[in-house]
Image: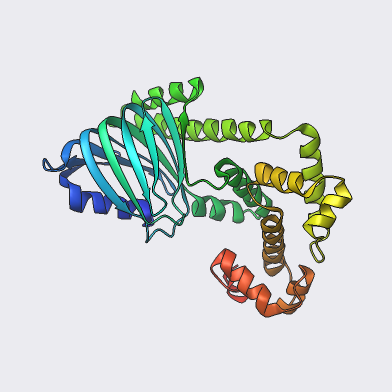
Length: 325
């Protein structure tokens, strides 16, 4: 199976060139051995299929740094720590984290951070990486744009403005992680088990986080936010101002904004822009309307402003997007 190169490939190439004395090809992946001057231990990497892979390390002691400035891919990482700990310093915000035994972490590679400094001490971890673009392409191929919107909302609500989240793993997550650790990776049966368990760990973690975010919102507030979303979706051409929307729903602007952020991961304004973009993408793919007509359909009298917003979210112009589809 041919895999497209991504930020994870760049990361392991960097690790191999700077920190490793040698590598060895395994049946289902690759193993990396750390040079003595940097510490003791190994890294491993297994590509399960395009867009999904497992990696990790078992290190007694090692300090390393990661340059994050060239990251362009949107990849989600969910990790588990079996023992020891890793101290993490992110720059330039200088936030400090500790990833220790029994912890689960979630990280999104597409962010504004420039560097990470890591100190591993008697640490063993596993990480699962899933590429958002692969998910998007798979779902777009069957025409289900709404699934993409819902997926992005769920992920945004989990992060809620954060870049890295570390917390104690639940019993279910610890159990799955231990099962993954016991799987042999030198035969086809092991590959099949590993694939199933990595997906189970991801699904369980994301389901737990989604339920957790909903607990913070009262049922009546959820109803109000749902109504607000319906009003926005039904009035894309002329969406109401946040204040007018709050008045219409008999809720304070603060509660409306907070509820939107908690439930969707976006502000009301950001949500409106994303809904407009998704409507534009649908029209570009499924109609012969001109760019000007589509801009008007979603409330933009100026097609240039529409094109600029579209490109900011999709890294391509409306016309190029239409041709590609």
